[in-house]
Length: 441
Ligand code: FHN
Image (tube, rainbow, N blue to C red; front, top):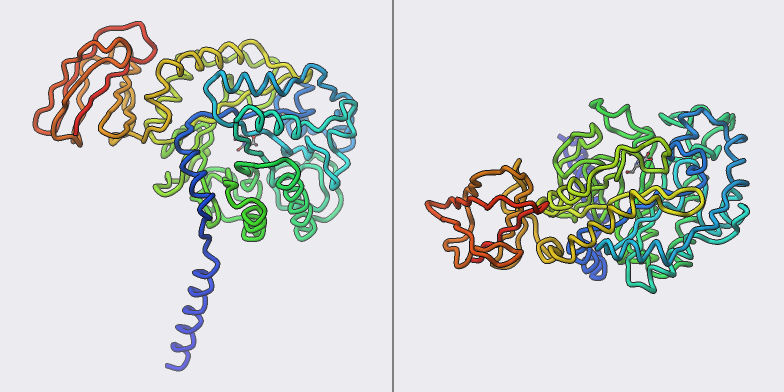
């Protein structure tokens, strides 16, 4: 009996302790979450010396390059054609509201003037702080800035590489020491959050390096990352700063948005997304224009403009943002195939932006024929499939449809609401996306 009482007391203390440490987002943070939900479209930039070999950002691991040999890339990184103003304008013209920039990927190269690692942009022939140039330009042009930061490091001795799944060909002989590595990350994050003005989010990646291989049941981590300390620091330095972690799991306490990699929320086509979509946090899905994140000279598997628009619409139909990636070239230029597609999307959004930005996900999940987005008393029915035929919207939430019309041109649409189901037969069209507006209540 005494023992039972004791365990009950211990349980109570534990619950109370957890309840106490539970993260309560600040008012600024909640405001930014709403901004993020409304923003819908962002640009992901995977860039660094890894672009030089033209084999993507995993080249160090995939070609089994040791730290010693990989360090040489720093001497070749001299992106003389990089122009922050052009990059940010390109994103803006594409209709993107934010940029998520790689500051340090798994190879450990820091793209800013950091005191805490010599493997950084100031020691390259370029010698200019890229994070600063992008940050200044984003602030100038009113584009929000998120910073990607890898938790995993293929270079540092103190990263717990012995238990890591990757980075085993780096030639490291030292012993991992997480306390030291954690301090290093906190120092770098402090720099990023104190030297570059407002940072709208930190996008973590690499947690999965310390979990069982993807797809296996055991998803627990081999190390305690001490996220409470990392997240606490970020929210202390910039309370509005949104934290997301690409751990491919259900969000942890302290996170402000949930991301999916190459998957729409709740789907798992990539084999990476085991998590259910949160119904509390803003959602984001990231995708590439070809098949690569970092510059890949042989990857010509470009998605068509129509496929990219479909993805944006479907993401919006789930109430999620699309973070669309580019991998700039080593000289700092962006390949024409990416520029053309972004320009196309921007043009499309100039016409259809109202049906995407500031909308909510549809009452109905995206379907084979397309997706629904909605705003007050308006339902935007996006018909993405060319030969969709008759569309039925079951369990329709409005009692009455006052007006049904094509978003483009305003022509009337015959939409019949009967016994809670709407039936629509759209006209054949050459448009990428035929949007039908249903007004009602
Ligand atoms: O390993 C990274 C990869 O290089 C890339 O950065 C993507 C982007 O979501 N995330 C990791 C894989 O999950």
